[in-house]
Image (cartoon, rainbow, N blue to C red; front, top):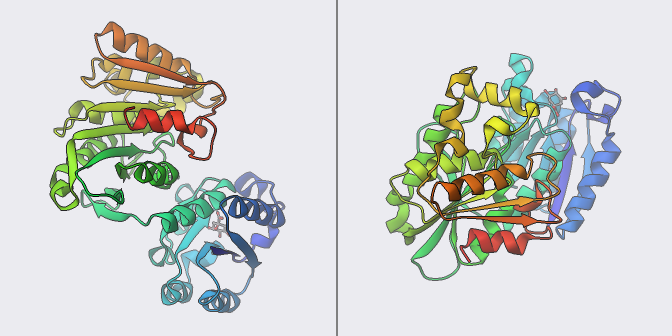
Length: 379
Ligand code: DQA
């Protein structure tokens, strides 16, 4: 795959321009990291930056016959340039829009992107990592294009369905991404897991959901994930899904949501798999206080209602998998949850991966993935 990395106005100043917002990496650093990520996935990447709208449009047109995917940070043009929107739309090359900063938490005019509707996906607020995630997204989009279906009216109430290349009925893995329930983190995080598991013979349903206020909040997030699981019953006929073999799999904060969805959904899952899950919120450490109060909208009184360990029994067999090198969510979360689940009479099993960190448990290229895949497929 040939990938074009395109950066718009003022991004030549990366490293010097507002490092508290954009970080200290220069544009050359970014291009180098992107080249390395593309090479790792077997792709070639070329990089171009311009401060001029017309030059960016020309570069997009020229890409038509030479490029399979574009990673584009349009800078401030994304808030104003219908011409760039039309250029992206016209060439029909899958394009991922990226913003280094969290444009939704800055000046109101930055919340609007007129270029985004022409793009396959938008990533923002993940720093320079967003560029790398965008390359991975293009890779997995090409490896196995999903069918994206709504399960509700809100733009975040959608999910990506991927079907195995075999006759059904297919078992289903529901994937619930993490990211601390915050806006910048979306289901592209689970692309790799989705493509890999689908290749092993299970349908995957990689869901999006409303996250923190003002868009979501704990009630909406849990309701959305539950509704996404239940939506399987309306698509199972068309896609030959086996509703008796549904596994709900959540990563990090997504495991907290997956637990409650597995407990409440009318489509009864056969299992719940937690990958580096936040499962004992009352004992997760003060580093999570801010995140949890944002999720709860300062309704701390509700903590017991959203804390998986306090809501046991969940009624579904569990595998809790955790990397011992996880520096984001302490492995103790999984240990304590499994202990409590067993005490509550549930079937629950702990898998600790010696060499895995927080993101390894959702990365098919990481050591330990075979164990993760086995747990997700119920082996
Ligand atoms: C930006 C966000 C834009 O609002 C801004 O004008 C930029 C950079 C980002 O990467 O966060 O130039 O695209």
